[in-house]
Length: 423
Image (cartoon, rainbow, N blue to C red; front, side):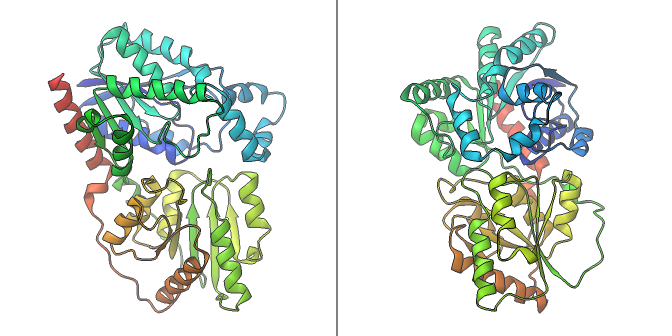
């Protein structure tokens, strides 16, 4: 068995799409003879928890450290008053301002605790590599510091861009230069870097240098085939059910989709047997958009569910909604995309038409694609999908196994082990 030390701030029992990548990676690493110890944070205020994902955890150990970051401090204060409600009801623009004020990121208060925990493990156990999944970018710095000190191979896993992230607004030039300096240092030092899309890889290489190209591997999020086994089918209702499973943040918003629905209602084109469900824990901006809509009678909001329940909701839908904002969205590939594909359902894709997600969708014969901001195209595609479902003209589509979590992990390990032999 080989050993990996993984820094993952976001890890079960926290829930949501960002948690699935590290926990599924650890699961399949073990299948291919890599044992993983995980360093994570102890208790934070977060939008959801998922005990089903916690049960999937196959790490040898999970070390949960203290932290002085904002989410941890809010959790400590939460014993006296309900700061969860304060967090969810605070407008996103204020939270974004607070997040961007910190150097590196708002989890920088975790750094010394993460490094201390990593040092203890490295002094007692032999590791073949140290990996950090980012963001937060603080995790990458912790892993880098330890790899430099103990001469270990560093792996950086990009779930999100860092200085190329469209949602990060640096308050000063000093903030930007500090982050760019650290990102360049991590990329140059790393043995392997992984990204969630080909576009993300190309953008990193374009900014930080062609010398990085050979050590960056694209590891798609994919789906876990085990999640789709023995999913219970619900009894069919008279409604045609469109569902969105997930959260909204940054530029991603249901605003234009809701405007498209309102347009159909105004033109008397909206069918009367449609139900649209949004499943997740939403911030105040999203709640206001949904609850103040003229389409409210068609909408049902379901609080965040476990990942297993989310899969059940997907499989028992008639169609699924996918949102990726246009600004800097060309290379955004969510895990949701691949699970949607595996479900076999119709997909109303509101994604950048020239982006990587749209290309994958069209390649697999999902052609109801428009930009998230194109209200008329969304309305037209909505009606086309509805009519196809009503007339039972649903296409059988190929579901390529290359996008399974297991195969993505195998390809990553092949790449990593080759690089480790080179170094």
